Image (tube, rainbow, N blue to C red):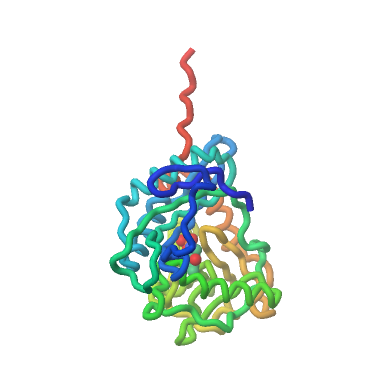
Length: 314
Ligand code: PMP
């Protein structure tokens, strides 16, 4: 992956090579940071880069920070402004990924959350596809269990918690699958390693509730709105059993990186006809137009990065 040219570090935008922490850094040692993942989409016709739902992402980042007793001097509007400035400095004119990070900047020995300093870092890189076969993924059920709210809060995007996701993903890929779904301690379907999950069954869209140890995904919320408003589907948030997944008419995962990834096989069982279903295909089409700022009704979700020069008056 190409390295960024710049990073936001210790309050200013600096050359990427200068954005470094010491090996005693608290978050490097104990996983006590929180992070986000935001996409920018290049719109060729308008020659514009659109950032998707930045304020919702930064609000979630600050909520994750709250869970980790972290305090920073920026609110979500200021973080959004930093992100836009960074993207302009990087001069990105292609699809990209923005990573904000709030980390404990102290260099000391001591596992705790209190009496520590917090800092913000941010960088952006070009980014395209995350799940290799996103039009027809084959997933498995992970033998790992999803972290529980009373262990490491799953609704926080906490750096250390991603050991759980990494174990899930690596075992799935090494076993020949594209991704894995993971169960809660009680045995209900929670989500993927970095994606929320949706089932379509008898024309109802079903997704596990926020109380089943999911990350409260922004793509999940986006898809729920689009499914209700544009496809007229009823959306139900409720616990999902493992075998219900096998019987779904359609199945897909959502996430900033994964976007809308169709799942066509689960543990070698075909979902529906074993090819991407019509509702998934329609949602993917809609989503791709919405994130690129092509649908007026959803322009409030997209923030333009570049200030277009006004056409000169003759
Ligand atoms: N679950 C987990 C564990 C994730 O890491 C992500 C990616 N942030 C998601 C779900 C999807 O969330 P979002 O749509 O906000 O990217």
